[in-house]
Image (tube, rainbow, N blue to C red):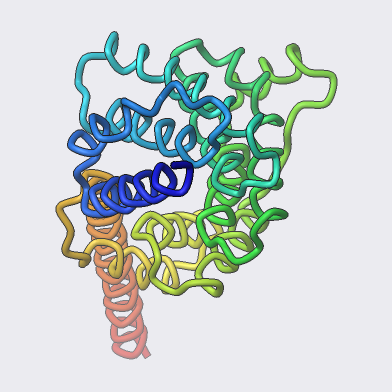
Length: 266
């Protein structure tokens, strides 16, 4: 009987994973909901958290509904970690959902939860060093800390004895590692490679990765959002390059004119 139940769950997981992978999370949630009471099954719980997060983040415009989904996702993620502390996916989704749910509580809560979010991503890497998404998430964490505005930094110093710190170089290391583990696994990793190279002033590298991200063909809402941001940044970079070229041409033309005038004077 137990074996039959496990086989049924495996079949459900396969359907749910396929629907998630193809951007159909709203269709997947009803398949998994009947098993939500299985608190001791990490595989059920982290998948619930993943679907609730994805639907609330990318498919729901009503912020009230999204906030409720964040509460449910966080509960499921906590159950997943409690059920299996060695599960990479449980820690990964715990970090993702905790970060997302903190958005609804304000900057102070987000800052207070920052270390816990990072620690779950570190634990995910420890549990499975071959999971590229965990490295990507660490990179995003580092990028967001490095990008933190002055006012938020001031708030972090007031809220925590030792506020979180990071750098764009540290973020880049994680994004590069993710790409090394599994090249082309996620459009968002290409986007963040482009964004990080841009912050570091490496325009050629930034343009390369942003162009790759912008050229992907996908209807998955997660990918579409990343593609749009990459396209906008790529256009902005192109505009800057054109303005820079025009400026250089103008300077060269002015110098050439002055040179000719000098020669004429002689």
